[in-house]
Length: 169
Image (tube, one colour):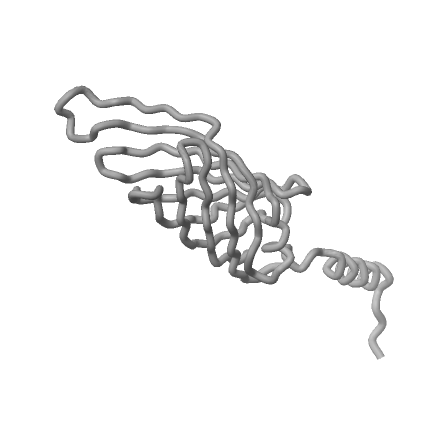
């Protein structure tokens, strides 16, 4: 019968206890599909009108701020984003109708999830893709891709439906 060294037994036991204590969302190779709805308020907006005759009309930039509400996806990681603080910083081109943005979601525990978006303007707002870029804590190394639908309700209030599939390394 083989004997196990006390140090090896301690290390193995500590590793198993640590793995059991980790939230399901922090385990390697996990996948999920997040679905959410947000309410946002415009906090900053700039418009730079192009000189007369320029085909691009105007360049836009701004920031919206609000809350994200989880409405789909069953993992702990998905549910952590319920009522997350949500900031979108954007730049756009009124002539081509395209936009780019940085999305930051901050959970009640203080963890951050970062994403970018690429959009196309429409008569109600914009639609496009979301790319998950990683984050802090349980979001470290996360990657994913999905879509968004941003709707301007007034010149100061908007909502954003977003969904993406994600996976941890």
